Length: 391
Image 1 (tube, helix red, strand yellow):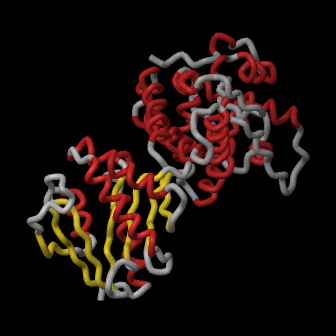
Image 2 (cartoon, rainbow, N blue to C red):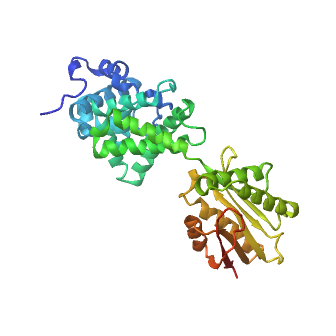
């Protein structure tokens, strides 16, 4: 049974009146709150009669009627010309390629609004968009546009410039202005949202329901909860306190280490800072956008007896950052600096039983060279030594 397309209840409306009805009176035409760019102005024809706005609206109204009746497959140049009672060359003057025609018809269902309404919750925005896709030809039009974009390099460029990027930019601005996403990451989040929606639309449109909207909203929450990190070098005021806190936040609840351990860290770091030379020693910091310390690694050379010898110390990662490769990046960063400075004999000590750290050290090339019997930290823990020769 043929599905009843939106607009069949209003078959008496024709021409420009029908076009106006679709644009201004149908609920499925109102997700403009996530689209903020003006419609793309089509290039002027190279020859032929001047194009009039009246002619354009009449042809587009005919295209809309065909879309309602038969979906994108009905939107051929021949069919539109026949429906609008104009010649094919008139169609080509307005839309030189079929993908351009489909994009403008799609815009009539999901227009690019001149203003961005940021007060509407994102879940409601998604539900409005899902309604547009499921209750009219917009979903089928989008699928056809995506397919056509792969037909030629020209079609791909038109798709990206006139369809994809304007919508991504509009969605990104909505996400940022509405406070859904922190500034600086809205475009990444927009890419993520569009990918999820289009995947469902192209593979299984029935997924586009309330629970799917909630899942997308949760994905954005998870996206913003993952800190954006940067590796930076050198001492900054407050680093010592932050570094100690990072250690104690892990070792106290996990290993039961307390006052003795914290005192030893403070003592050893103080000894380094008394002779700290940024041209020899390294303080490698992993920080989020707000400057919060999320990981650290210190390379001591000034405390060593030989200038080509370096000791890696105070390596620690915030729990949020583990398992993402940042630990390996910190170590690699430090080793590259050591190579550049001719510091080829590297060593470190760590607790026996820190398997994750051991894996990182061995992956970087360190080899286990000694297992200590004494409890250096007076906390009931054993230590091991690893060495690496960079020559």
